Amino acid sequence: MTVLRRTRGAAVLLSALLALSACGGSGGSQEPSADGGSAGTSSKTFSVALTEPDHLTPGNTSSSYSITVLQALFDTLVVIGPDGKPQMRAAESVTSEDQKVWTIKIRPGQKFHNGEPVTAQSFADAWNAAAYGPNAWTNNYYFANIEGYDELNPESDESGEAPKPKTDKLRGLEVVDEHTLRVTLTAPFSQFPITLAYTGFAPMPKAAFEDLEAYDVKPIGNGPFMMDGEWERNKRIKLKRFDDYAGPRPAKSAGVEFKIYASRETAYVDLRAGNVDLLQTIPPANAAEAKTLLGDRFVSTPSGTMDYLGFPVYDKRYANPDLRKAISMAIDRQGIVNAVFNGTFKPMGSLVAPLVPGYRENACGEACVYDPAKAKQLFDKAGGFSGTMNLYFSNADPSYEQWMTAIANQLKQNLGITDIQFRKVPAADYLSMLREHKQDGPYRNNWVMDYPSPQNYLESMWGEGNRMGWENEEFLDLIEQANSAPTMEASIPLYQKAEDIALAEMPMAPLWNWQDQAGYSDRITNVKIDAYSPNLDTIVVK
Image (tube, rainbow, N blue to C red; front, side, top):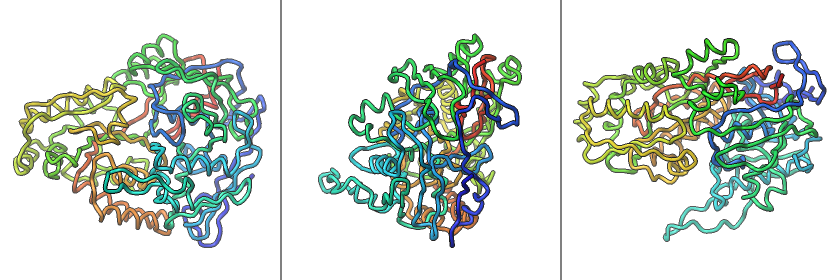
């Protein structure tokens, strides 16, 4: 048993992880389950309902739909356990003496699905590709705190074009030997080990770089499942058990088929009919029925997922914080939660989810409290709004249009905005639209927690290059101070001050926190869903 080692001067965060171990794994036919029982392996496959992903290259997607698949295909260096604490997975240890220079020891004996060994170079290659600006991968910014990032992402010149980088490798990545990767950050960051649980930090084999487009539809991972054919767009993604997997979580079933649905409602109908085995997101309107119908096969778990209403502050019509606050105060969050989500979600006055250290229930204050009279006063003070207000959301789920309809009605009634139009965007195009600032009105924004830290929410969504086009130097300075704090405990007050600034300017208004409600068929057992992973490797088909 290998524990995460702490060296002199390491963060208190790391000391909290000392009891966590990397489990030794084997592919035996019987293995103790988490509840103390035992679950055998199966020669059968099961199915999971899924919305169409955008990409399947780990460094190029932040979509929760993609991540569900990637968690089965890849072992990251670290994972977040059901208790919310990090555990070693592909790494043996992650250590530092100063929180700036980190040494990662890769567990030997691991293989990619094509037989290539998993090495320190496998991680360095994947991280360099994600950080290389011209690739324009979604998770590029996750590597911004590694030395050399700026060299891979030069600023645009007078023509508006960014010059081609002179290098394609991060200076802060050093492959010391086959199983040792040294990472030098731009500043101390006590939460670096937690970030490594995110799928954007997964390794990639050398074969991936021979044809990245082909890799995106048939990724080669290092996890318990491997691709079984190519991704069939808008239809299915099939995986099969990787028999040479040498990690701590061998797949207990022969395979999994992700069936792609246009809506959760259709998926729920198929779950009831026995046409799909697992649905991780039962529509809230069906939750009561599902609980009665499924009994113990209905699973409700706290979620790190939140919905927000974002504002394009780069559009002068939304530049006034008072207007944005007025819109926030004109929204009856509890009323929408009751009507659309059957009372299962939690109205939010914080930018971070309740699962996250440093969460404050009423951090937003009155700006997140339904008060139509005060909202109208602020609205008039800001000069009101003229012209068409476009509301943006994706077509991934009917509930998005339902609550956007409720918001539109409330803005019309409480603020007197008469011309409101919907802009429904295909799910596969929605995130790219937001990143490219093509939205010209309030939009649905959603965040699925990558790891339980305020930094994951605040820096990722409100930091540089955010979707709102919002800029605040004091906010960025506080985030930098928090990231460099010597301990997690010391970082929290600084993150909270940064949160206060974002809430005061309201470039994005928090709406509600999800409660994940899943259900599964009587064909499968040993289902262990938690807030961090569906744990598809544990499932056994009867």
